[in-house]
Length: 246
Ligand code: NAP
Image (cartoon, rainbow, N blue to C red; front, top):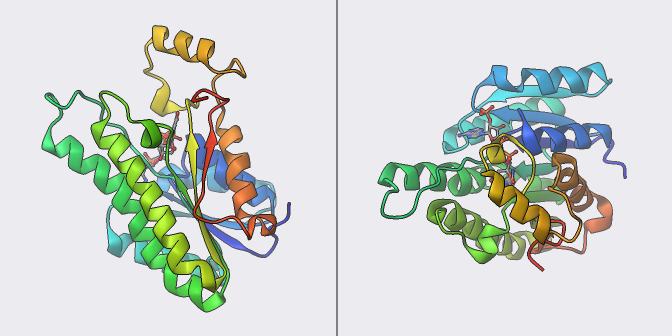
């Protein structure tokens, strides 16, 4: 699949799923603006892309800030001439049962995981509408579809992203912009590193494909949704979980 000549912005591109998405988009021909909370965190992925002959730019931005999102989008357009593909991937987890969860843990997760995507979609809306072409892909989760004890903040944010996705699909459909969500199951990244062994075993037993997911499994779904071939798909949630939730 070719995205040659297009420009993408990936939040949370420094590691894990976001890094795999940034590398995949670059491989498909996109110039990629790689966002992390600190610019230096995205330096490695940018070096990897440029070493392979691609174009990339590291930007430090807290996704929870609308002003930072607007500045990041402006920098992407100034550097690459457009913003065609937006991937809202940055996310954090602050897990606790509700009785122990602090208001701060609720606010942090909602601000980063949900408001962060709204901030970047809002900042990208005008240039994408002007170009009458765009792809917005939001990283939700299977827990946004089913809920999870100990993750009221995280699951609410991930379910909220699905509502955001469907609403943007309706707002932007007539402008050549699609908006879809990808809902991963358990993917081997820093975020799932602390998973207790019993839970890991349980997942391995329950997933029909018999393994945990890789960041590249998720990146493949994002790349498909970013491509020209997905132009008639919008407002959808693509589950990438090895069949775990079947
Ligand atoms: P990860 O390895 O923990 O990476 C998180 C990324 O988000 C990092 O690049 C981090 O950048 C960035 N980030 C966090 N807070 C930020 C902020 N305020 N501003 C800018 N960037 C910020 O996570 P992951 O496992 O790859 O997950 C990526 C996405 O997929 C998340 O939205 C997550 O909820 C979702 N997801 C993951 C799984 C899974 O099993 N791993 C399952 C379902 C959904 P820094 O370098 O600045 O820290």
